[in-house]
Amino acid sequence: MIRSIPRATCSALCCIILLVSATAPIAGQSADKADEIVNTILEGGSKGGDSDKAKQPDPAEINKGEAPADTKPVIERKGTPAKKSEGDARESKPAVNRDEEVIYKTGVDFYHSGMYDNAQAKFQELLAKYPQGTFKESAHFWLGKVAIKRYQYDDALKELSAVTEASGDYPAALFLIAQSNQVKGRFVAAIEYYQKVSASFPSHDLADDALLAMGKLYASERKGVQAIDAAMRIMKHYKDRETVPDAMYLIGKIYERDPQMKDPETARRIYRQFLKKAETDDLFRSSPLKRRVREDLRHIEDTYFKMEQ
Image (cartoon, rainbow, N blue to C red; front, side, top):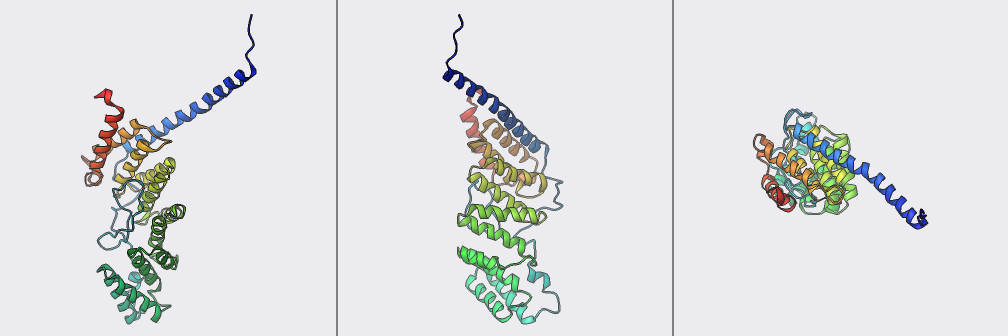
């Protein structure tokens, strides 16, 4: 005699079947995506990308070699900015007022010498004397940078927002606006401005920095998919730039830690590939992340793969 199954039990079994059938393809897709990412890393080098030159120094940068969550103040790179400011681009033109040019250059010299009070005074003097002058946009830009050095991020945002699209400083101003919002904890606004830099100015020297910063922010918010997407864009389109090792490390970290994407085996493969590249690739060889990658790889192997040892 065949017993009938209670309605409640039947409903529970149906739910289990539906859950299994719904989740199985997702798990397979996740594994396929991880393999695709790892294969891209294995096949891709750090030479011959869409960028036709190595990365040059910029006015400001995200701290290299930091953990995914990074809200430190802006750090200056040493050297001459790769992108000339609006004032620099026009200073050789005869139409530029000599006095205005001297004030501007003096302010820039003061800034680079760490004399921020004097730099601020000069740029304010320039705006007062020549409110519609050649260096108006650049004066606001440098005042924004002075404010950042003083951790006065609201003032920085005000000055940098005065830089218009017509200025050569505009992409860098957007980047600094993003950083200022990031330090203030306004992560959504920061991501929006980083995205604008990378999408609107893909050939600019700060485009890959913006992607890396955006990826780290997504990682700090446990948005692993978006973080990996930003890092992969660096590895695919900026293969000659110094952010490539950082991007690979970020991807490995996502697979090591992210609650939704955690996959120790994939993280191990990525870390091993990082160290392999460090043997032949100058970008990886000189990366300050090498020691950290070794430590993370050792931790993963000791935690998850003891039986292999």
